[in-house]
Length: 462
Ligand code: BG6
Image (tube, rainbow, N blue to C red; front, top):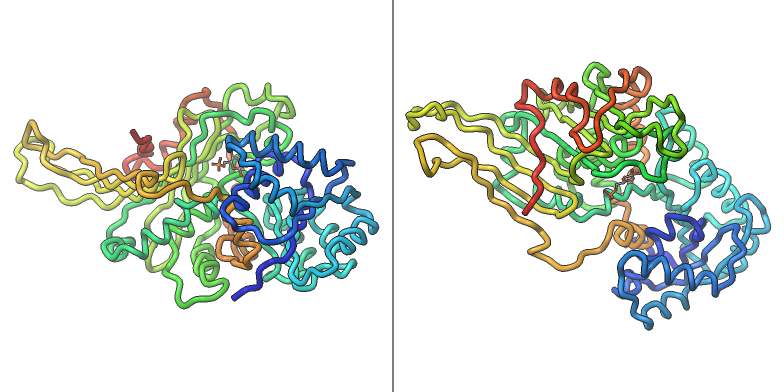
């Protein structure tokens, strides 16, 4: 059993991510009795403890939580704050002095990735990395070469087992659920392969633009922002073999097998779109060709998946906010039991909805009530009907990192392999095609899925 972290040090506690995610997650962990150690916030702002308290309260309230004073006080009692430059030795001397008894510290870096290496170097030089965990935010590199360089730099000071790379999709319950549904249901596993499955469609649609994140988003684009990380992680959970045995890395090793079986993506099966109005967003270059939408085909060349395309599409300013995985089974042969033209049943589909309302839908075929043909019927289940208020992704991941559970963090293999797979798309991007806001992106994307029945309209729930 891994050792529980005995102190959490958060670099960048005054920043936006802390405001939007971290304080709220820590509050919820405190409320559930899941916090047991002191927390040290570090940032360059000259905040007093009163300032920290005021900001924390505003941040937690801002997440829509009704604050219980006793829980909030307990959380604040854990906190201390160090104001210092991330690149000054003195800051690390003061951190060391603040945590003299720490045996297993966790350092959470909510700071620009360009600083990861130097902060970890300082931690190491101050003697703070022994038996420590380092939790880093995305993005981890912006292509294969930069991801490898960052890995090498960090591995100079800490080993891979100490590094926890956050991909918040891996903290989403319905993403974790993919493995439970696949391997907990005897009826699914025998048909989860190329003999029965025609294709897989993964959709991540957002019905809003990049808002005030123009300067972040413009150099990044949709492929790097959500496909290389979030959606390839989801794909790997849909495609992986069952984990064998117990222990660290078991899940990540099976994901690695999937990534390694994926040939580099083909730019001929890649469509990029940009919503009208993106160029007017503050922080976006006037002639930017960054994609806010992308659609692509990927393949997994192994015994289970050979010949089954994995289609992924993701985009901003689309008509709905919905993320789903859709497994499209092979079409059964036509049956002469229906005398009308509609005697060829459509393929069964299994939809696993990740956002906004987790659920599963099974599309079956039955007799049309008013005729002789077939009709599609749906068995729908919304998971919120089945269980209460589960932990949020950041709650889940911070708590897992402090417990030393690495299953839900991207390892080096995943980072290297996913960048390798998408690299040809970065090297040879097709021209970007503009699309109207509130539509499903460029019509050109339909060519990718045409032979497989097209993009299915996502399941939007009740
Ligand atoms: C982030 C991306 O990683 O994920 C954003 O940077 C995106 O652009 C967000 O909107 C989506 O996450 P969620 O959990 O809101 O679906």
